[in-house]
Length: 224
Image 1 (cartoon, helix red, strand yellow):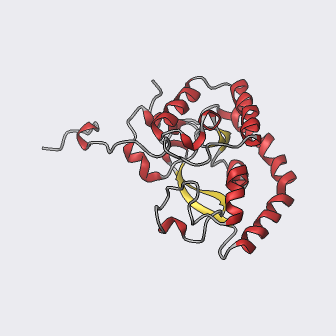
Image 2 (cartoon, rainbow, N blue to C red):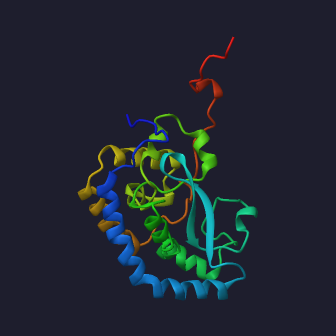
Image 3 (cartoon, helix red, strand yellow):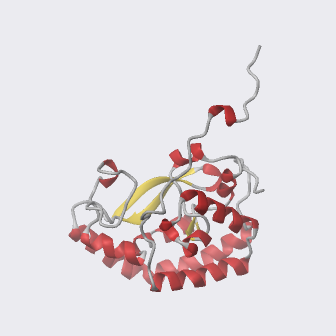
């Protein structure tokens, strides 16, 4: 069983994983900077609004951070329609946004998150803080790793997997973590990007964790 994190739980992989993250993210950011500038300009021209979309996500040990993405939907889309849930054909997705999502190019700004230390190249995909209230203590073990640009669940089904299955795969990744394992996931990610699929939740994906009963939580006795 993967232990639930505390505020002092060290990140999965420690210094070795962090050095590997920087060794990949820094040169990639420099190399891809011209591409990201062009995409940012195209996003601004495609529809009104900022080029970069920022959203609060739960990171290492449940600490909030601002995840960065190229905006792929109309400005303010999270307050419209189905909110955070996005399906293929969603009319909030911009014409350019559909292409960016299909090729996962909207995630490129997260290289900055990796350099900052908010994220890792490989790890569980970041979740929104409100979903953590549905996690069991074992599922909270997912938070002992920095969120990743890609991960084991990403190469096994991406958004088409229900969240309960994605979390189980993430816990498997954490239990079996190794440098070689991370490198293999990176290689498998290239294959996924070349043949993009499962970008949207479809009929099988989506958040499926039930609300947790307050009685299930371990609470200290009330003072007498």
